[in-house]
Structures are given as C-alpha cells and as structure tokens.
Length: 252
Image 1 (cartoon, one colour):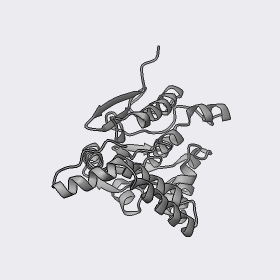
Image 2 (cartoon, helix red, strand yellow):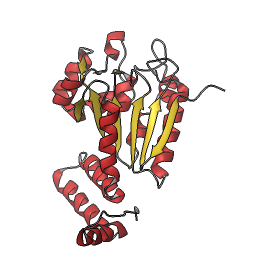
Image 3 (tube, helix red, strand yellow):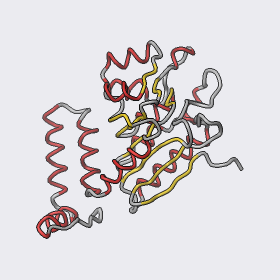
C-alpha cells in the first residue's frame, strides 16, 4: 500500500493538512488528490474543527502535478482536488513556503486566504509547456487579482514572489521567510475564537454574492444575517458581551 500523501492534525479547533511526498515538491498524484478530496470533506463535517490550514511539509508548498507530459482527460479528472477545498464551508487558509506552482497554486487558490513567505514563488506556468491550468486556475486567479494581472501571469508563465503576491492580492500578506505556517496558524487561531456559524455565513455571503448582481447579493446577505440571529451562538455572543467574558460557541 502506498504511503499517505497527507499528514493531518487537529489542535485548538484548527486542522492542519500537510502535503507530503512523493518528492520534496509534493507533486499532486492520484493518491494525493483522492486524499485531499476525502480529507477536506471529512474536516468540513467535524464539530471540533473551525478552520482548515493547508501547507507543504518541508521546503515547498506544492510544485504541480505528478502527471508527466500532457495529461489525458481521465488523468485530469482523477487528479483534480481544488474544488473539494473550495467547497468546504469553514474558513480555509494556505501557508505557502517555497514553490506553489501550477496545480500547487491552484490548490492554494481554492483556499479563502493565502499567506506566503516573502521568499515563496507563486505561478501558473503551464503555457510554457504547451498546456493550460485545469484545476480551476484560469477561473479563480482572475477573480482574485483581476483579469489583466491574471493574464499577465498566465500568458507569460510569470512567477511572482511572496511580497508581490501580497501587493496584488494573490496573498493576504507576506510573512518573513520560514514564517508562513506560523502566521497562518495565528490567523486561524483568531478565527476559532469567533462564532463558527458566523464564519460559515460570512464565507457564503462573500463567495456566493460575488456571482450575483448587487441587489440579490444584498438580499442574500440580509437573509443570512437574519438566520444567524435565530441561533444559540448569537444569544451566547450577546450574553458573553454583557457578562464581559469570552463566548463559548457551539456552532448551533
């Protein structure tokens, strides 16, 4: 049996998923893709997990796919995993050290936040080898940084550093070299102190609202806010504020 391509741990409400092997670049093979799909679905259902952090074990986040040459449609389908990450209702973060290239960056783009080391390298370089991204890169990148900047990266197979990634909105911030995982863990810890339902509804409002015109998006925001007011977590938040203590949210 092949060794697992993921290492998963849960502490303080944060699930940390580390990409591992089969090489130091953690190229996505069929096993890793299947494990990512299953793992993120499981973590979304776990009551003890409020946020999910994705990182690479060792020097690099992920350098791409393990498929040699031009992938077949069957290979592309079996190796896709980004949509499973994007489909998680809880907040997701990517901590990027070293290289996040090609499918590796596509995995990071599926997360809600990316924190990149200043020494990291991020890019979708598939055009240089005569292919195109096929795990969401052509769709998520322009939605994140704008069409012009995305095409500049895609058409030139351009790789950007962590500080530039933060400047153009590809990353939420740049951390010192070697500090991406620590910075992402700190951000995730802040989230775990918030109401889990509020985080889920916030994420839903932002992502789904982006695909709607302003008026229906505003109605959706209001509906979600109204729904939250009927939850036990909202009542607990009000009580905790009145009693000057930290709230104890249950996700209900």
